[in-house]
Image (cartoon, rainbow, N blue to C red; front, side, top):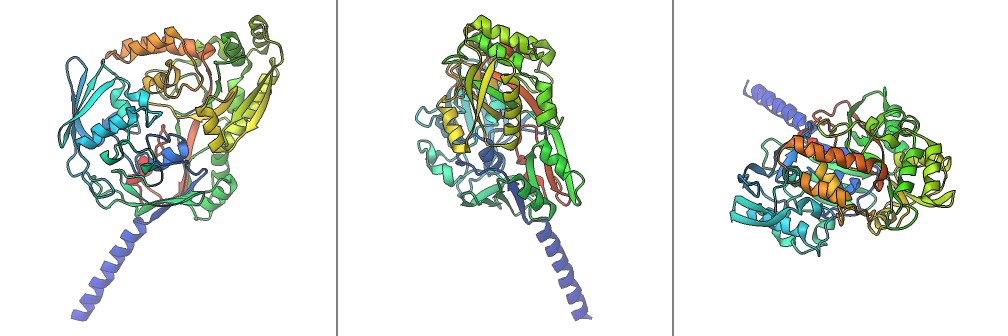
Length: 499
């Protein structure tokens, strides 16, 4: 009798352990590109963002699936009546992956690191309103501002908190990241895989549920699809419409979708001819048929888009507001004639090495070539594309960029004179004044009036031809539960995922 009960208890324990093991396994992910680095303050491209954002690193605040700002490493905050002092109360018991405690000095150091000219972070513009950061006590940090900053709380969600020891070190986190997130770095085999392990000391009780994440670098879309279908991979995050269409209806595979913040674009270098002339930029917009791009390159899974995603319902103007969004090749040619440039206008377009971007670039090339341009496509490997982008070494480029929940996060760093991602060399006094004004206003209706003006001006004569906002898909094995695709492409919901 005793032996029987013992065997039953052992058997029940084995079943429970087996069930826990089954749900707490490593999630095999099929990724299309290898990151060029893992420092969250230096490398902001999608392949890096996908690995580090919300998984390895966290910010003082966070953005939920409805794009609302919620507490992150700061459990609460207060704002002074004049809007110039933010006081954050940090969560207690938060540890970095190296075992050290995360405290207010780490937060203050992180702010200084992102602002440092020596570090040269592309996120620096998001903190341009911050004048100082100091630790009041181990769990209280105070940010003082030059002027009120309405987008600050949303911006802080994108600033990963790192240990104070790396404040002046540009190399420390590129290959060995150290954050506070639910998963910690374990191994990186370049062009092979990146392996993250469960953070057993994670501050959020009961999370993560998985024992790890393995980002398998698989450049070929067909190989990733086969791997998902046969169970080799359990998740293909942030896939394009063509891939989603091919996977739809496959046994044991399910799709999740949302309208994304990221946008397809053609960027123009306005520091040299011909795009230094706003009439040429306007002509390029009239030459483009955005609905044709959606239909031909995105298989109908998307919408024509302006400077802000339609997902930002409180901010985005309808594209009908922009005259140049009505395709008119004859108008484009007339504008080129007014600009006094010789036609066809011969230019080179650098193309980001993603299949969806390549497809869009080919459609745009055909459209422009019918309207007075002669476009040569230059397909580049990712490292070279990013280097040329940073150095403003392009006539045109075709790419896909991340959007943001608050317009300031995108507009200020991209279009403000001297902005940290203003690789177009664009400078417009009216735009600068509107952006400076909008970020200091606390009333959203007043901010919207300013951003409406910004959108109207940028849409036709700005340095970016915004093309489309796609439907963002993730494909997964049907046993994967708890993962939700996010409009900003973050994989932060993986902390709550399980099998």
